[in-house]
Image (cartoon, rainbow over all chains, first blue to last red):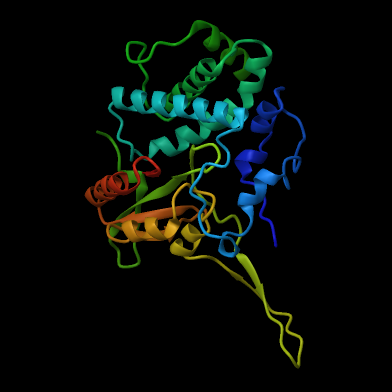
Length: 161
Length: 127
């Protein structure tokens, strides 16, 4: 039975770096392909239909990533609400894309330098990246709406130089 | 609230439409993900009595791209298509994105509400 590749997000170096509990970049392309868990990537039309249970939920690394993404999503939603930005605002596309790139670039370094030490820290770093990207796209993020963390700001300034 | 203008596309009939990307949640990490057609499928041909060298690149239609999310999203794409088609048109964007095209922002808001009612926070529309 043919197997599909894992989604890019699983194969991206940052996430694999997290999986292996060490900072990226690290070349692990294909390392987790072909494990028992990856069975869900078999062609869905040949299988027994959509699995209803969460096959990944028992993996502690997956649990951690879910918590981080969930924190990030909630923070982002709250920020956009406070800024009174519509979720359909076209500027969000470029801002999210830039924030994602910046986050992926800086997260491993921030972990290495212990600027980010836990899940909340990772979410906070993302929010700084998003705030920076929003400003680049003409959306002002006032200090009163979203106060910045001095340590992360300093770190990002150094990395963005 | 700000929004709207740059999501707009002019349809072949000259009508201004709004396009938003369609996201589902990754079954593994539960974050919003959306398929992108990076390159068209290369369709070749084989015959019984002759060789055919022709290769025809073929894109996917919006609904076809949506159906490729089966097993990758937390929800069944056929059910998503059923809801989406009541409010907008599934299309593939200029950069291969899976998008929904709406006549106006109200239709987009209606779809967002319908998706939330049917799938909770599992399917989202965003620029």
